[in-house]
Image (cartoon, rainbow, N blue to C red; front, side, top):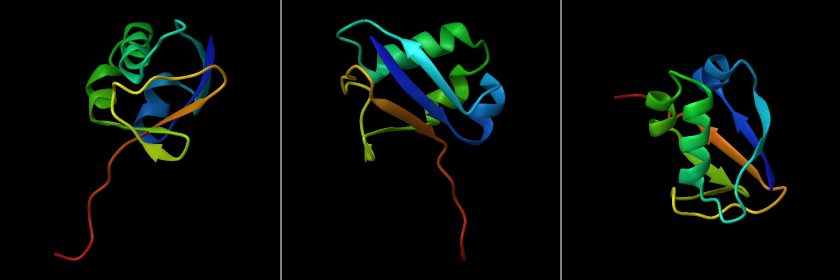
Length: 83
């Protein structure tokens, strides 16, 4: 099945695109998708491991299953503000 993947910041720079279409297995999880992305794009794994996966505008765990046509976003956490 195919899912859309959206990256921000350093992840998009590492991949060379802000959006991708990725083919994954029928019972794929976010963890499976992350593993496939890390294998396809060497050097992505350290940042991807810290990324927050978003599925349908909801933060999800790596165990969450993806479905045909869904969009998965990987957003890098940010910190800051007044101390």
